[in-house]
Image 1 (cartoon, helix red, strand yellow):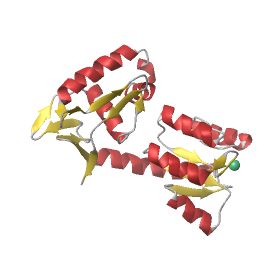
Image 2: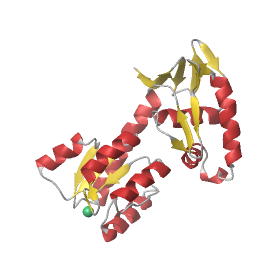
Image 3: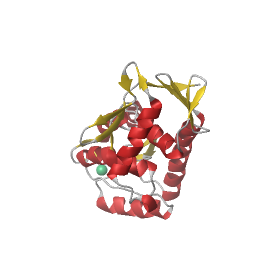
Length: 225
Ligand code: CA
């Protein structure tokens, strides 16, 4: 949640956490940019009037970096503002004041849509085909034998669409909190095993190591109908 009004932020946070969502807060555009890179959020709630910039340009910047839905929540309610919001890449536009129940419903709808995209699409990259419903990977008609964890690692990287996924974010995406004792080394071992199974495409590895930061899916990803 990106919001510079501290009392509103606290109130919204309480309301959203009651629903079971985990909320991270940013009060400035700069903090929001940083947070989005380290946390890979499922959804961003974005205020427009921020002390160090406007939410519209921030929305455009985030859109290029993260694939999740962005909901603009703002007092700016003119038609021009709403149009600009959608032009900036927002998935929904809500004007303040807005009741918590309405906001929760809108968030649920956005998450549902994002999830539907995730669970029905199948993806292609290089000579690999990813069946997201059955969590299977194929090269031509041959299935690659990957574990559930390996598939989840692939998917987390594919979803970034060429952007770097920091190691911390990858750990958080694949293993839940109960298993957080998973060490950095375990991640490296999983990745190297997975790399061997995926093979290479046009002489490049599918998964690139970005030294000191994390990993990147190195081959173009296409959505299949
Ligand atoms: Ca504001």
